[in-house]
Image (cartoon, rainbow, N blue to C red; front, top):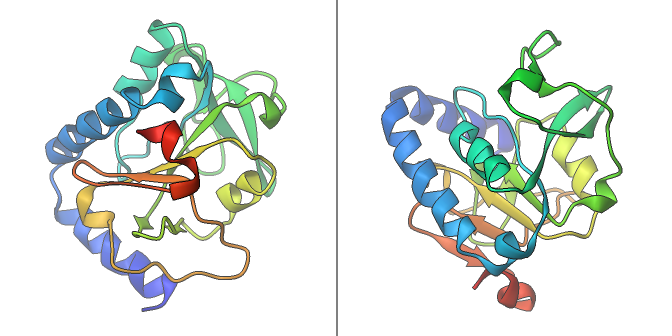
Length: 190
């Protein structure tokens, strides 16, 4: 299956999956992540402000901020992602090309990050990620060595994600009933 075909298949599944079910799965996913040593030790975490068709993050991001974590969200800057501190929903602006809630403020150097939680269209057991096709996260992840966790709903976990030479596997994949980690980094996630 090509990337385009897989994106279409997942889009069709998203259209018939109730929003309430996605929130239930998100709660399970983010509770699993909160129990991981990497999350407990990290003070600087990049997450994403979810779009309506993504695994919901709004509740978890706000809870983590309230718990004292330094939360960062991405902001599209040309062909790249700027990493900007998140200070609550009032610090978001959706007046941009993609109408995505993005944080207002100055971008920081991604080297400060201790954990990156990555959205995906699909993930597989080899920890490969299929994104939306613009390469924003591919470019960002190629510049950092901090641990990465890909998150999706169960129906977005597939047998195989098509990969290209520039694609880099994530360190961990989490769905509501699956956790797969890079064996070399097992101690970060278990």
